[in-house]
Length: 321
Image 1 (spheres, rainbow, N blue to C red):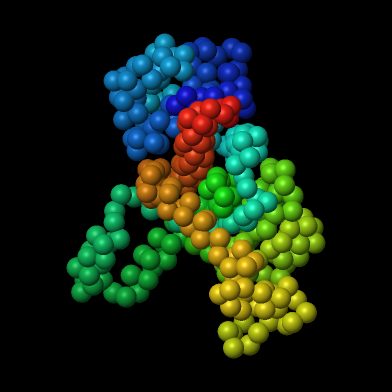
Image 2: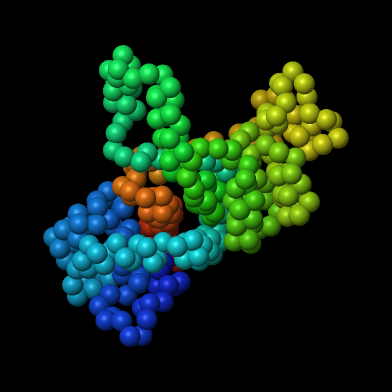
């Protein structure tokens, strides 16, 4: 909560309006939301936890515990894309001051994942589907599956392989191609970090000649994406295109390691860290609330890494972040 409060104090204003009651500041409410997400509680559960641990509230200057409706309204106001982008800008500045980005030695990686919309395991779903197999028709099953896929929350991340920090993100709903949000993930990271000549590695879901043109010609970056979309594997891409060069660059295990593409797995490591530490299910009932919850998970992941690095710098006798 202290790190979250300190981060929000640098970016967010103290109050939303000069005529409000001024019971809580926006950084204090953001710290409470991070505590709620870390403990995996609902808004009512977070209120109960804060009432039992009033010393947490006193540590960030709160004299009383916010109501669950206050926390819900604060999430709708604070977790907008503009505020989240400003907070990620501050995270990138802190990481640069601590020399933790490491984009000069290791590449920038991107990946996407889906979250569950409820607290039900896949094993339970398979058992239920097996029990209903003789009661439902196949057409109804396909319709139900298609409706479920359209509602899946989707999160795309851009991470630094050296520190596992998330510097860009995109949230949406529904399964589909990863290529449409390639520009946002890469441009936001390129805008935030001071090192403008890093290497960007993505999986085959982002394959496309236009993505290479965007990264190499407009941003001056070195993009590495396997050319596996739109053409049979036995028919190589045209040799005069960027996709043809990717086929030559990634033709062997040794060349993939030499160009840095094997570091792309660090993006999947970050996805695994988020789901193991913060859960792979969302509690929101609407698409908007689920997007806010995914953005909060991204910010909380970076805050946890910053806290761990700050503790390491304190033990080493260095200046804190």
